Image (cartoon, rainbow, N blue to C red; front, side):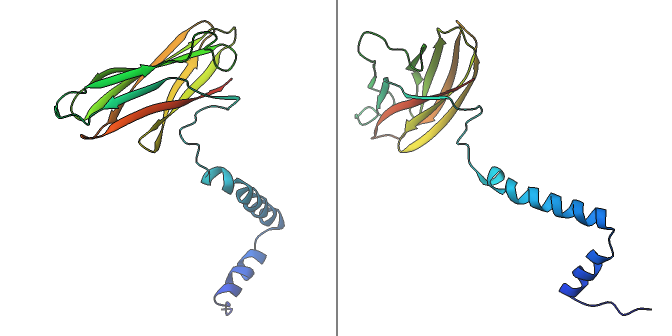
Length: 170
């Protein structure tokens, strides 16, 4: 029986025993794997589509839990943009609304209206208490409206400002 080398020499010896075509395939797969490392390690932050337009939403929802009565939200205001053209990204209109709340949760309704002739993929990134919360809306057909509801946890004795960024793609 032949003595086989140990350790790292063993792997070199075993690679030399493989056919040349198989060694070439292993090298090609390894090279492609190196180029795919950034794809597998990147974070899309909830983005589910190719991004072609980004716009800040001019609506801010305020939730006030700093009052004495701990069981109800005393104030929830929607501050909308000035009158005039409120569309974003060439014809997309968006609205954020506080729909319901209890002592530790608030529900935000996100409504996106597509007034263009093109279908879009949409998502919204809400800025809430120092954290960005991605919300995938999905496909918004030409002339259609898409909605989604997000439930956010809120603490007593705090006031929250919730704003967002519209992220669109084809």
